[in-house]
Image (cartoon, rainbow, N blue to C red; front, side, top):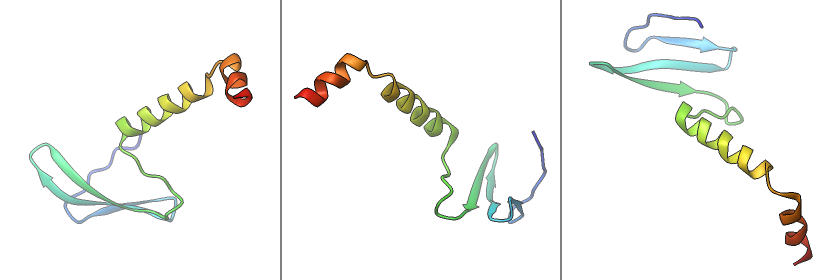
Length: 72
């Protein structure tokens, strides 16, 4: 992991097309601004993990249940 120090209104650039800017600092909370191309998904980690879990559950559908679905 790369750890960087930044102040308000300072930024970092990732892969030439993603910019992360420090917008605001209040106590222990930091507000980030992220500029990225539309095709690059940006999620909070807890949301990303929920999406991954949902995808995992969707992939584990029982073959019999899937067969019944298409016979209906």
